[in-house]
Length: 207
Image 1 (tube, rainbow, N blue to C red):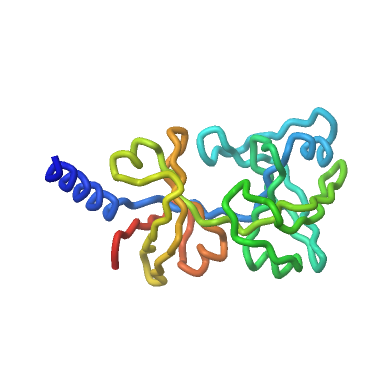
Image 2 (image 1 turned 60 degrees about the vertical axis):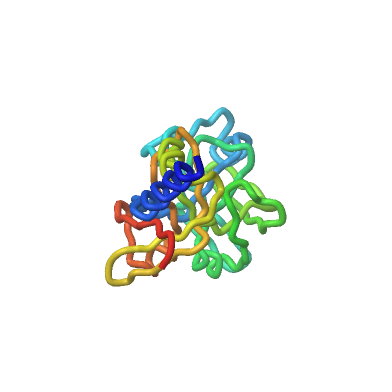
């Protein structure tokens, strides 16, 4: 039995090391709670999907303006569907422009984060908290995770390809049967590594 377990683990390690993951560059965006959709766009308003991002998740036609102590970000895309709590995801470069210092957090982990003012065509809201730098992460289907030995919320490393090749450390794995395989990085990370949507990175087990 021990020999079988050892063989399975060796096979999983080999499959982990050969896993190539498509890149999704995540530009600044906002997730809105239902009441904030109405506050910004009007009573009874529904978001308008224009492009699927992950199964059941989409980029909406709607955009808002994010206002910080020092500057503003205009035409920030809203992603749907609405969530339980409003969340603003920006890059470090964006944070300098706004004049705020958000922490690196996993999506939904908003306690103690800074806020901002959001402005829409029908109103504005003063967000007390909810602005983050998103933790780079891999959306991984459950069948791939099981076959290759990945666990939900595991931290892995990935290597990029090309002339500006880098290794991203502490990449969070999110596992769900509803996911399509994709790594999400922000625009600063993509620019540093010379990556664009549809490029590939490779999970590495050791250097």
